[in-house]
Amino acid sequence: MDRVICLMPNCCFLSETSRGVEIYHALVAAGAPVRVLTHGGTYESVLRDAGVPYDVVGPGLEPSRCEAFVRSVPGIGPPNQSMWTDEELRSYARWEASYFASHGVRVVVTGWLLTALLSSQLAGIPVVSDHAGSFLPPLYERGLLPDFSSPVGLPLERWLPRAAKRWLVNKGAERPQGYVDGFNRVAAELGVTGVRNLPGLLLGDVTLVTEVPEVLGISRAELDAWRPKPRSGFRPGARMRYSGPLYARLPMAVPERVEQFLAQPGPVVYVAITSSSADLVRRAVASVREAGVRTLVAATVHDLSGLSGPDVLVEAVLPNHEIMPRVDLAVIAGGQGSVQTAVGSGVPFIGLPLQPEQDTNVALVERQGAARRLAPRHAGTARMSTMVRAMLADPGYRRQAQRLRQAYSDVDGAAGAAAVIMELPAAPAPGPR
Image 1 (cartoon, one colour):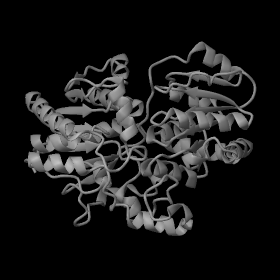
Image 2 (tube, one colour; image 1 turned 180 degrees about the horizontal axis):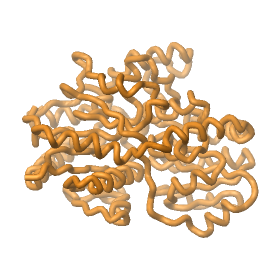
Image 3 (cartoon, one colour; image 1 turned 135 degrees about the horizontal axis):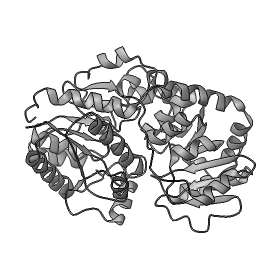
Image 4 (tube, one colour; image 1 turned 120 degrees about the horizontal axis):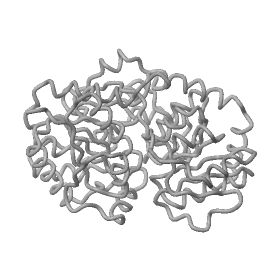
């Protein structure tokens, strides 16, 4: 029987769904047998539009459940919950394991569809993670994580000196245990291994590092040699492999009114903050508008009624890879897909990170001189307006962004991911843990 690869994107997120599309096409091009399984959700249409056949396990997700899920993730939702109810975790784990057995699945590839951490163990097959971004053990073991602008729960963290906060962040990166209680309760019921800490939600048996060494700051040889420290809580034998940048190239045209907006004289700032609240988007736009700059906004699922005007154009979903190269500055949260689209387009950006992974993604580019970080609480303030003006006035940001663009230009991240994934099926699947 062919060793089938099963991709499991979380269709509550545009970036993750589009990442799954890129990997799917690369695997098919390489001749691999592939199936796509999801819980359903807001961005199923991205799979359909890209010609990707897929199955939905369970009842399918209504828009309201997707919205609630996005509000529950780290950095947005409270840490004393697991994003899914115990019953959802229990049911999905069993449904998925049954699906794997029925279709001969021998390796699972997922992002934030974390039920795969349980179902893969029930099925006795390895799981590949593609959603850790740059929040990785090799970074904090070397003290390379930034002083997070997003809150991480340190005592008096808003008043800590930056050096002290950075030291504490790196030393304590594996300690946070939020968001995992439900996983551990259900894992105990199912007789599989639970999740020790928040970083454990990000790592699989193999973790795809969807970045380049020039940006991450760790050589390929060092990354290949990494293994979990004793009592880290990560999967035994877990390892990491560079696969390269992986971001969306949605097969859609730029709307005519957007073309006309971009053709007008003067700078344009692109606000594309998707997995967040509508309030954050509105506040970010207010700061850009106060800076006196025309603003193009990707609303995605947000209700931004009343925001459009002569200097602000709001569209639902836009092909970021087509828009980014034509604007002067981007404003994003800091998910790796958005960060890499900006870097791959050679455009500087302001990051408003909502959680540690986003903070890390933005900080790596900030260190290269092509981005700035700003705590989300400053969106809508004069501080952000000043930052917009300063970055537009300083050509050094664009020069550095163009330099990083060159580092991406020769790397095919989707093909790199496919190559790493296809290494796994050649080995026997591990037994249940």
